[in-house]
Length: 143
Image 1 (cartoon, rainbow, N blue to C red):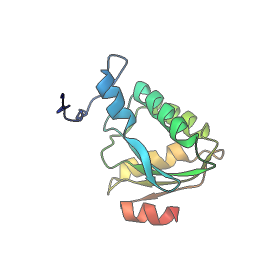
Image 2 (image 1 turned 90 degrees about the vertical axis):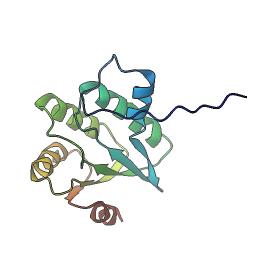
Image 3 (image 1 turned 30 degrees about the horizontal axis):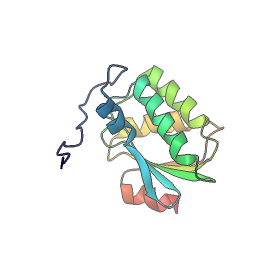
Image 4 (image 1 turned 180 degrees about the horizontal axis):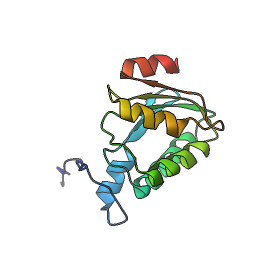
């Protein structure tokens, strides 16, 4: 009998690209997961890349395909300030989420990330959003 004793992949604070291993791809995608009911948790990587955002969008589409609508709880506590290309890709990704009804972000006490989150989420075509310091505040905002 064979037992898998492999530990889950620990993602490094770096930009991931197409050279990522299958285990890294799985670990990236698993940073978006069902949280509670119709709420999905989205835990951003420390350093964002266009590649990982493609994986995140794929994961969001996969999980939301079984939902009528959903809310998104976004954890930016590990995230660094995104590049202009990443911010543009994030906007495009979120605008494409037609089932997304509400977004609540928590950032810790990071003013710069708060500003970036507001910029990315401020498009009129997107779901209503709020930005919070603490996870508990963001959860309460989702109802």
